[in-house]
Amino acid sequence: RSLRYIEPDIFIEFVKEKFIVNVKRYGLVINVDESYEKIIAGESSEAKKYLEAKLDEANYYLSAMERRENTLLFIGREIVQRNPGFLLGRTKKINLMTMTEVSDFMEVNLSTISRAVNGKYILTPAGTFPLRYFFGNKMNKEEILSTIAEIIKNNPKISDSKISKQLNQKGMKVARRTVNKYRKSIGMEKNK
Image (cartoon, rainbow, N blue to C red):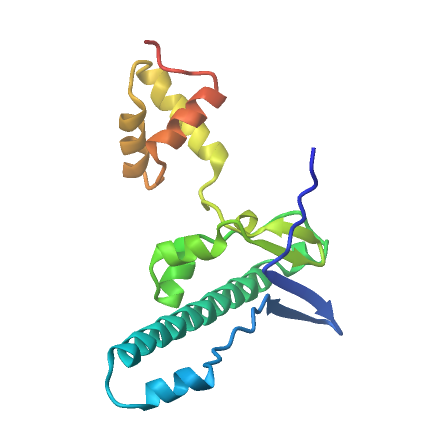
């Protein structure tokens, strides 16, 4: 069994009665060799076009890294805003946020937030957590389980996708696969 070391991407500290949020910075810069600079500054050539394209590509990656850092910084600040009691160990309750809320507020695509969160960790005064720990579905799981149980009780042969549609009509957005998982957890699998 090998040890896996976790390197956090977001760091939250509580110093002098204030939360401080930082993100891991890569400090990337573009350095262009003198001989390449001469080619870029020279007259139009295939080499110049090639080097300019590569420079544009490098600048694109730098700007993507900067956007990623800004996204993580925003998420870290939002976690602090919603969960000061949890972060200081005063409560075990976490006020979850959804990726949709963050993407709407930042005016970015939902997949941008999902990629920013995926596989990332956050170091807080309360410990180190996967970043996904602070995200979730705000619906009450118990309420969903009880609604699924009621639907199945009235129609034991109903499919997971039909249950999902009924839940969606009640304002509970639950995917078919999640319905299947919940159905199994309450021991009411569909009779085949």
